[in-house]
Image (tube, rainbow over all chains, first blue to last red; front, side):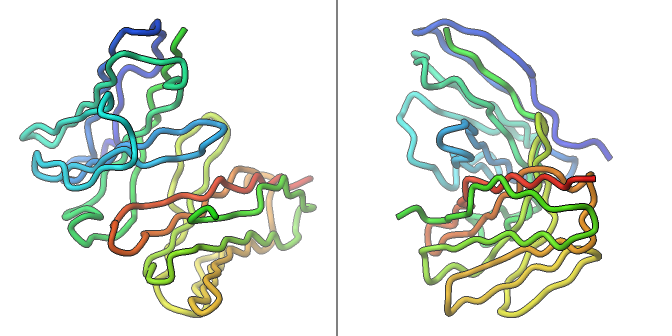
Length: 118
Length: 111
């Protein structure tokens, strides 16, 4: 059974640009959540999607957005990149209905997309 | 006060010893608690979940939960060099239904 797949694995952008990251969850998992990991702030929750609907959102500015498609694949977008957005962005999938729906916190993480903003 | 606090370490133990990792949380209504392991350069992986007061054992790992003290711990018995990693405590915080992670404890098991 394939795990969570994230693309691209590494990318370099400059300030002001935007970036789109992709995540394919484990087959059968309909809940996808995104996290940002930095050395200073650790793992921070960005948002959670279930059945193409954003169920929960962390404390990040509106430049961070996401969506989920009917096949459960998810994308997140960061616009007007800032130096502080440099981080490892992790996608995790879980069995229905996801945390916001009362599900367990047993998340399966992808390998992440490492974003460097210059 | 951070919602989930861990001793940042680093923590070093000799091979074969017991490693003890601690975590406290601030949201008294939290109900679900997890330990994730993250090897350097890798993504977190779930190793233990605990929902009720007391101990839960899985192989060499034992999770302990004390809701009255808002404290959760992870014991690793017979520690192996392959256990060297960062251990992340995570809590589903009350009504927000978000998984909040601690900053992690870096464990090194010395051969």
